[in-house]
Length: 354
Image 1: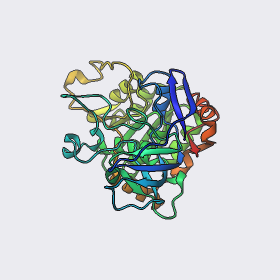
Image 2 (image 1 turned 135 degrees about the vertical axis):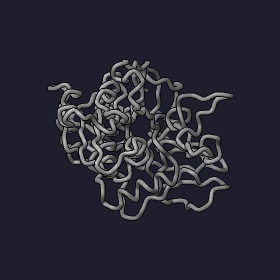
Image 3 (image 1 turned 120 degrees about the vertical axis):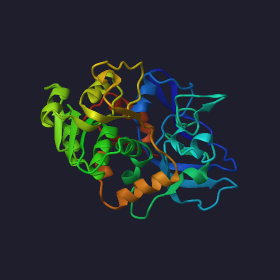
Image 4 (image 1 turned 90 degrees about the vertical axis):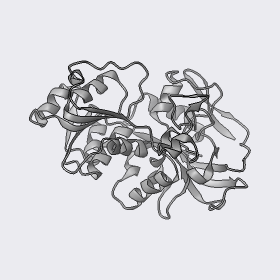
């Protein structure tokens, strides 16, 4: 089968691999559509370490090619997705209710990978076929009438963005700031809107993303290239600050900005994947006396999470397909990476078809 293979920092190439063997609890998916994530770009650049020779990608849409002998409740040929995070349902993390952390155990400790396995510790979705572990916990049938592109955001960025809003415990009437309006930030904005926030401030500088931010529910969009976003957000809120600030980029500057715009007792909901140590300024942290909360979220995965997200899409409450701005065949995956990694042509998300 064809697969996008990490060769070394700076090189992901289209190569060939054997079609995976299917174990009793597994399922083999024939990928019909997948996409590229910002995390894949971190892998390409060598900023996130994975083994050389790994197939990358963690956002699969397709159909069941083959079921393991112990898997029931599904049929071969059925259209399905699987989340980027693949919990077993039986681990300590899963049994404690933290399904996204299932898979991070290593010996007597934990690794900072949570339950992210596709394209991280096992072969991923940018290929013609994908082996899905613990299939009964992770495969989710696609509702009739939904296209591949409509559900393409569910495995990762929709789940992650919504998760940031959920972790922030947004309430009706809240004021929310979302730092960065890339794909995950846009879904955090949409999640804040759907949870009842009435003032939603997006922070962005790219015009296409600023426009999409308003489409997703932002009432204000602050262009950080023209004004100081902290000052502007404090002006918009009449000096009160925001109830919840969502950080969706993974930089010191956006994390610190999100901390500085919180009202007393506010919540910073962090979605960014950080590549270095974070520093928390004493004044922004109110010297530890501000009753603030800092929470982190890894993309919630699993069958039930995917079902809920696809039900949201099917209801018509959100237009996920609008984020697909470019389309490539798997044969052109290198070109797709070049476009996406360099953020050319107003790209938000690319659809890769096999």
